[in-house]
Image (cartoon, rainbow, N blue to C red; front, side, top):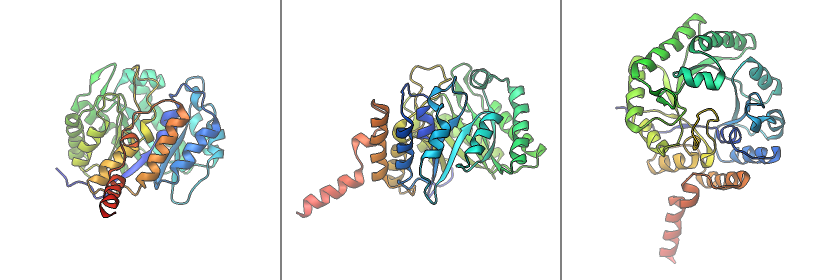
Length: 323
């Protein structure tokens, strides 16, 4: 087992994750307000919008308007999501994003069919076409992701050998197109992961591909998000997707409570208490989490925004003792 990382990188996905599934309506101005608030927290990466079919995801019908409206801050990388070439071209046209090329495969064919209406074979072929499109537009490709890497609501648990086989396909694709994959993200898209399966899958992939940095995308439907992040830390994983206040969820997961990613402020709090640097101002992040709750108009699942930051409570206790 590797040592705990001294620092982690957080990819904030709250705006994109949250507004794709909230019933709303949520105004364009309020979406921009959340992105602007996140930009002041010390987060270095914010995924802002989804360029997807508005008929399927009406919450992002205003993706272009939001893209032009938020204020970019130095040192912050702003990214977005797309699922096909049309979405990519929309993203490029905004001239607002750090466009990163990635190979994206899915371990569950049944979920892939619901999510993108493709078979595994069709998706493999489509990734080749997307790689060529990236290259035509001068976009660097050094990342890959595996959706449903820990389990699926339609197919059940994911055998380790299946995941290793799908990861092998990632590197086959990369080799075909003379690419070097530096980061591989394993996504718990439908919240099937537990600390035990995190360690099993992460350990198996790392043993096969020790030179590739791993990232985790963890959903919290069953309350395992922060526990799974802890397991990832124990395995040396230092890159995490997260969503402020626990915003979001997958609209294609067929689960009535398909929760969003592991909560950003809860993850930051845990890491700070463990002595792991995140580069994030937790006080400002908690303020942003409270803002997110106000924007969506209902309670959100994050815990630290309600329970409080122990660093602040310790200061208050010390001040009271000194007085």
